[in-house]
Length: 128
Image (cartoon, rainbow, N blue to C red; front, side):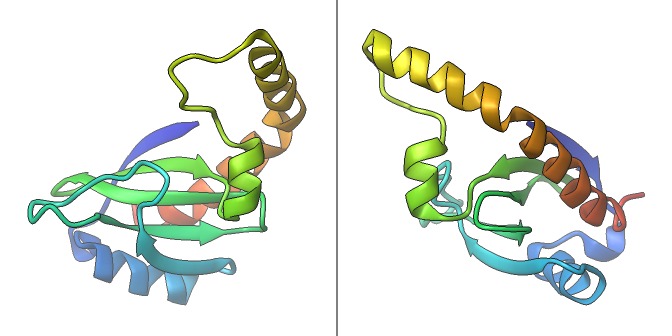
């Protein structure tokens, strides 16, 4: 689950958007390094993103893809839960891992979509 949101020019940096979300949102909001995708910035350092957390299983991360557009992705903020319930990135998986992945996705899909829409709405408050 991901979406691109065009942001007002008042909030066109990660720090400005983070301050706005901390003030306006009812959820826990933090600025963290992107450990989910391991993106790097222009200096070769790990890039930062804004994480809006609803619970240990549901959160969204937001980062700028260009000057005024934010990409919002659903994540599992807890590292242990992410290791178990997150999407496998292994090149080769056996049949049990594939089947278990489909079962996990089927069980979590409804609650993840509901949380994603709710948290995405918080970021949309800063949209054009």
